[in-house]
Structure formats: C-alpha cells, structure tokens
Length: 278
Image (cartoon, rainbow, N blue to C red; front, side, top):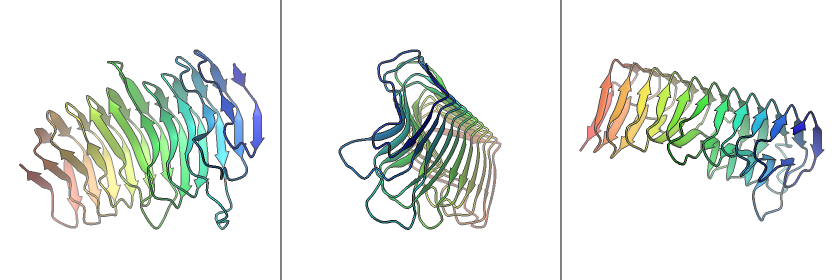
C-alpha cells in the first residue's frame, strides 16, 4: 500500500511508480511536480500503475503548475495518471502543460474511472485527452461522475473522454472553451446523462463504432461544432437528448449509417438539424 505521502519536486519521470503490482492501494497521497520535465525520451507520470490489475487509486491529489510566461523548454508527453483494470476514484488533478501528447487519465484497459476532478490548462496542439480508456474482452467498465474543466480560451486544445468499447460513459460534467470533441466512443457503449458546455468548434459527441446508445445528455454549446457525428456505423440509437447551440453547429450528421433517433430536443440559431448522407 502507498498511502498518505507528500511527494514534491522536479519529479522528472514519476511521482509514484508501481508496475506489475496487482491489488495495490494508492490513496490520499499529495504529488506535485514543481518544474518543467523538459527532457525527451518517453512518457512522464505523476502516478503510474501500469499492469497492476485490481488496484485502487483513490483520493490522490496531483498538481503540476508552471510559469505560463516561461517559454524556456517544454513539458510534453505526460500521462498524469496511468492505470490498468483498476478502480480510479475521487482523485484531484490540476495541471498546466505547454506542449502536446498528454493525457489526464490513461487507462490501458477496463478500469472504472469515477468521481474524479480534472482541470487542465494548455496552449498546445497535438494528441491530448482528459480521459482515454481502452478495453479488452467483454468486460463492461464505467466512466462516471467525473468533472472535467478545459481551462483554455483561444484555440482547440484538449479532447474530453475517449472510450473504445463496452464502456458506460455516464453523469460526467465536461466544461470549458475550445475543447476538441467532448466524448468519443466506439463499439457497444452507452453515453447517458452527461452535461457538456462551452465553446466547442469540433464535433461534440463522436460515434466510431456499432451498437452504441446516446441518450439523456444535455449540451449547451456556443461554438460551431456538430452535436453528434457518425460515419459508417450501424445500430446507433439516439434519444431523449437536449442540445442547445447558440453558435452555428447542427444537431446530427451521419454518413452511411444505420441510426434510430427519437425524442430529442434541439435549439439552434442556424436552423440545421439532421444532415444524413448515403
């Protein structure tokens, strides 16, 4: 067990590292990186629990603040918290990053990610996601009750939640300006009761797999992004969602897909609702 430790300093590679350590408990730790990890050569972590199935990572605080006016070097390639088939619950993450290829929580597979608070400031492009959850086999994992805040105000920077298959994405709050997409799911997922708000220019919910359900979500967008985008997928059910867009984004755009949409509410300045292509 790794509990109730205070770890601060440069922490160039890891704050807490527990590879190949199944059924560990990492709880109530405070971890703060105080300098840019400018060195290249690989990923850097505040908590790294790769290949440690059945572990609990709970109520830990992860801080990484920088001088935003200090352009001497970069701090790219960060996975703030890395896990695998674990319970990741009630953690607090507040970080600032100045270069791309970053993740807030990176799940190698099948973790339940719940009740976490993640706030990220970034001025970088490239691949950056608040939560990425991979999946293997038929296990159904959940991403629920997380609060994500994108603290960026002048260009698209971070994407929200990506889940690959067999995942329930439920009751999450995603807010902030200049998000990329908010939720991206693949096969056999359920996206329900999420609240999304802010200026979003890219697609808000993206479906890249079959047999997925999008229901009971509330979106308030001031940007130009399409509410839901689907490309070449089947058995997609979209119902009882409320989308309010004061920008110019349409509700739904689908290409060569089989979908069932009913009971949705969409209000927009553009007059564009459904746009279906063969």
